[in-house]
Image (tube, rainbow, N blue to C red; front, side, top):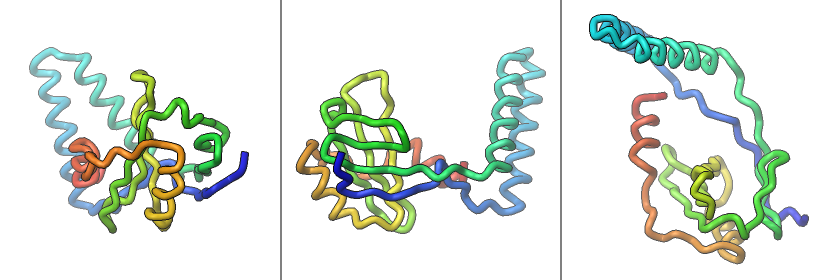
Length: 155
């Protein structure tokens, strides 16, 4: 497999959060827990507690460095390989400094869309390489509402 382009990116990014963000988040989670107690919805309360624990663990853990490669046969993320035949299309959302991502949609409905941060990669070079092997979805011009909301709320 000949490597056409490659780069490393962190497993996830931790946004810069102010002290007021943490105070608001704690108050919000307490309010949700109180709601779950008053409505006797203990499963909802358990889900909220699990969410807080996951956020705490992620906050205190350093993200792993992930290696991404585009080869003549497909794409490779660390040791996981995806042939171009399993990918339906790709698209780029490039709106620096907030959004610089490469997206892959798989043919399988069970695989979610794969999002690769471009970081400092040249999006035009990456696009030209991928266009040789995959269809580009030109209809996608902005990130999904979920991604934008997560970025704005610093989740």
